Length: 193
Image 1 (tube, rainbow, N blue to C red):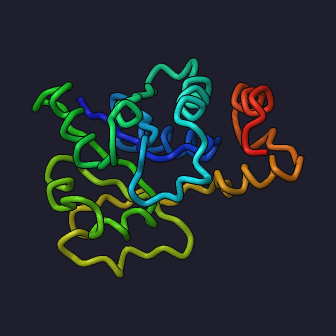
Image 2: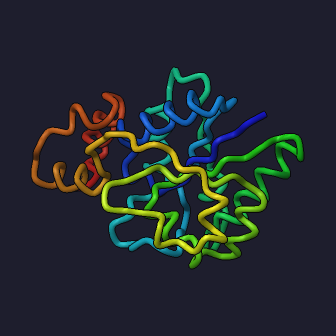
């Protein structure tokens, strides 16, 4: 079994995230992709972070009908800081040694990998997939990390969660940027205003 672990704040989930997940699922023959919204990430500004229950619900709505996608609340349920290493260990225990885990992140996150908790242990327990992004080259990354990272060809998305939040704040449409059910949820719960 080949399992993709797609972590992030998903604040909110958008069509670009779904496009990336579909690409790695197809291109690398993954069995499934598990979306893992972060609970209390050590690297994010908490004041802009929407409550975890809303982010989780938006993810569930976004992947509804996608049989190879799942959502896990593993990091949301964890108290204190949430580290990727702990998540990977926990999922590895759930699925057993026969499961191959692939951690999916943007190239910007991969560049920060040396600052994560036990980065070499992460690379030992899971294959790290870095999705190419404009203006982020992994050449700057130390070779001991770079040689263990799978580069995923850039997916043209032109969408970011911060842009979506700003559009909502300004009263602009987000119709083509997020799944319809997510757009409705944002409106119904007055998120990002």
